[in-house]
Length: 587
Image 1: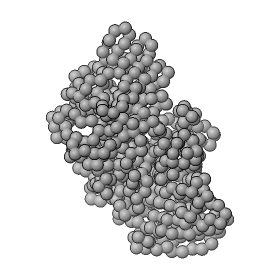
Image 2: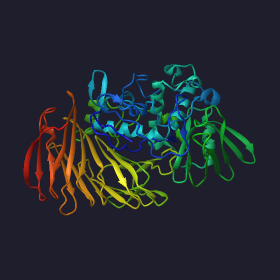
Image 3: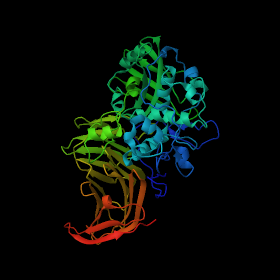
Image 4: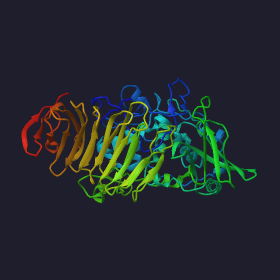
């Protein structure tokens, strides 16, 4: 798996976490046509590519080809859509569903580009403009990269939502080259590929991330769907295994009474193009069951639930098509209202952090009061006031939800490999207002437990491991003086380590401190990327040697740009300056 940073010249690294969004199935090797269907059981999928290098954007196709693809032409300029003009009652899978099957991140398919992110959130995601193209902020870069990666398991929510929007007359299929959904081709149709990815991502964006109703019993879901057949509200349907794992999204379009308290929810299952499929609900017993596979030729999985599991859910279209909130937008050194007004936001930035994990271990988030959010054993718990999760619709048994925690609290995230049977690579993201952290390439062994601690604001991050692996840490910040990304790789440690990263926007400094075993001589590889009105500039240094408990402090705010030196101070364990040097760039 591979990941690209703000410039194509940066080194390849292990792919990023899941997002914000959700996936449905594992991708297979591609075939010429049609686009390869996804498999029934998802696992870690190849990276879908990020938006690296000015206005570049990418999906699996760009990544597989060795680099990102350019941002695409504008198809729709606004996120908000006109009111529906057609009823849902005329929907049928054959006439209203796509003729191709749900797919993962396969070569030749593009996901989000900078164009879609700007459409969703406005100019506030742009650090600078290159003509009419948006150069994304570091936070937006990382968020899109995580979103694109998450589609490696499938695009089911995108299929389910877009089919509804076209059926009800809110989006014209002619924009993508045909008179109806059923006539649309996926192969070579980048506009359609990007549109499916766009609506896929909306499910993990506030307020849509909170709108999926996970409180209903099966019989209540049936009643809601009945109301939607001739009403203004429509829904995508979510089905999950216990604990909100192995999820899938479909489009409900009818309810059929089969007698003896049994009804069928008829739905368009994008894993089975053109077929009529049904979820059986016993209204008296309040139970439901359905069997599906991402590939009809593969093994199927039986889903079922009752009034207590709350594993049959609905997500409202009206929330999805209303204004969405960019929770990672803004500046770390400016007031929210002033910053949003300057950059043209479409909604008020909420005061919470988003945490995403991509891997086969479990994570548990603990706040400063000892309240927890995440998995304890097989149970998903939420004790943190104001926190919530967005369940991930994916075929993977180990998929974590996307977690949202109110800002202003110290947080500890435990990455627990107790359930692992073999070593596994994973990645962790945190998104906050104007900043992001990405922990890449965590080499987790069975039984290993790593920890990441976040200060109450953006200013300090601490990563601790007892193993020899040294993940790459990437911090991106948006500031009034420009937007910066810091990438740090620590080597030279073999017996575990704690890495502290600190940012002081007032002084314009970025600090790295490594606590290791006695006698250890850690070395830093550092990349600084700056984006402002003059464009994007990069500084790289491959070897900053540190003594035990020594800190390296980089004077990023005073760096003059490409071809100039970066002032660095080395501090001893007591914070006194041990030496100073102007480091030269090393390509």
